[in-house]
Length: 345
Length: 273
Image: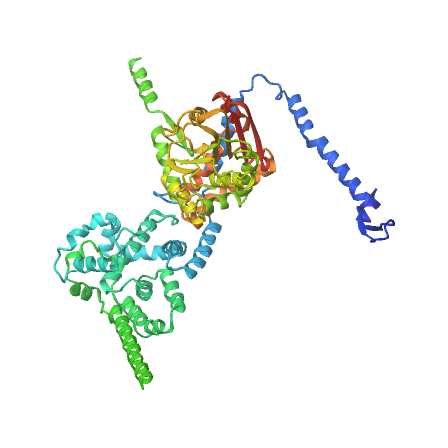
C-alpha cells in the first residue's frame, strides 16, 4: 500500500489499434484512483450528510418537537448581522466617522495616492489622500499650534463651520470694496466656487483632530482669496506649497513636490522661479494661518490683514498667464501676416 | 392600566421596519432605500460587478434563458412583460433581445418600473446609448412603487420579473400580492434574488467578503453606508423555502426555486392560476 503512495508515476500507454494515427494518452495510475476513493469514503463516513444527521439524531436534535425553528432562524440571522456590524476596530467617535484598521489605512493611502497622481482633478482622490496622510503626529502639532494662540484656542472652543449660510455670502457683496469679505466674494464669483464644496472628514479617529482637519480643509478657499490665486493647477500648487510651508500638512508637501512634474515646462519654470519660492518664503515667515478666525476678519481691510499676517502678494498669476497668451497670439498674428505677404509676392 | 394601553396604541401607530439593521419607521424606509440607490445609480453596474465579481451577468443570463421569453412564431397575440425595480434595464433589454433573437418577436411590450427616478434615468440613458428601445412605443419607463403599481392595470401582464430588487421592498408580502394582482391568469412571477448559501465553505468565504466589502466601497467609491446597507439587506432576506412559501401565500401555484452558485442567489417562480 505504501509503495503505491511512494512510487507515483504516470505510465503512458500507446493505442495499438489504428493505422490512421497513433494516439498517446495518459492512463491514470490505479494507485491514485484507489487512494482518492478510500479518502472520499472515509471522509463521508465521518463527516458526510448521513453521519451528521445520525449524530444529531443521537443527541436528540433531529426529531425534536420542542425546537422552535422560527426563533432559531431569527437568532442565526441576528448573529450574522451582528458580525457584519462589528467589523470596525472601534465605535464611531463622531458623525460620519469610519474607523479603519492599520492595513486598511495603508490600502487607502496606496489607492488614493495612485489615483491622485493620475487624476488630481478629481476632488475625491485629493480628499482621500489628505485624510490618509493626516497622521496623528501632524495633527497633534497643528493642535499645539492652535492651542498656543488665543484665537486658535477660541476656534477650538467655538468650532465654527464654514458654510454659505453661516458666512452670509449675499451680504458680502455689500461690504466695502477693499475689505477681505468683498475680496472673498468676488473671488468666489470669478472662480465659480462656493464654500460648501468641502467634503466631510471620515477616516480620522480622534474627534478633535477631525475638526482641525475639517477646519484646515474649509479654510483652503480663504488662502486662495487672500493671495488672489486662481483655481488653475498652478494656483492650487502654489497654495498647497504655502500650506505645506506654513502648517506642515503632509499631503500639501507631497502635492507641492510631485504635482509640478506633470506640468508643461513653461508652467513648471514659472512655478519654480516665482511662485514656489514665494509660497515657501511666505509660509515660513507669516503667522500660522490656521489660527486666523476668518469669519471675523471679513470686515477687515485686505492690505491691513496681509500686513498683520506678514504676507506680500506675488505677481498676479492670472495676469502672468494672460500676458503670455497675449504674446503668443501676437506672434501667431505676425507670422500669419508674414505668410500672407510671402504668398502674395 | 390606562397608561399601558395608551402606550401600546402609540406603539402600534408608529410601526417600524428594518433598514439594513437600523429600525426605522415604515414610511422612512422607502426614502432611505431611495437615497441608497440615488447615490449608487450611476455606478450601479460597477457596484454589482464588485459585489459579485462579475458573476451577476452569468446569473442574469441564466435567468433570462430559463424563462425563455418571447411570442412564439405561430401566435398572434404579443406578450406584455413587466420588469419591476429594474431601473438600470439589464433584464428588461435582455428579455427583449432574447425574444427577438430566438423567436423573431418584435411586438411584445415591456414596462420598466422603478421606485427610484435616478435608476430609471440610468436605464433610459443606457437605451439611448445602445440605440435600441429608446423612445420605442414598445418600452415604457415609469416611476412606480413595487408594492402598489398604481399605473399598472390588474390582470394585464404575462410575465412579472424582478431581479435583485424585491429585498428592498418595505413589505415583501405586499409586493408579492401586487404581483399577483397585475398578472394575467397563467402569468408567471419570476424573481432573482440573493438567498441562503447552502455550502458551508462558500458561506465562510462569503461572510469574510461581506465584512470587507463596505470598506472597499468606502475607499474606491466613497460610499460606506450603501454597501453596508446592501450587505445587511442580503442577510435579512428570507431563505429559499421561506420565500417559496411566501409566494404560495400570495396566491401563486406551482411555486418553486432554483439555487444558483450553491445558494448565493436563487430564482423563484410562481404561476397565477
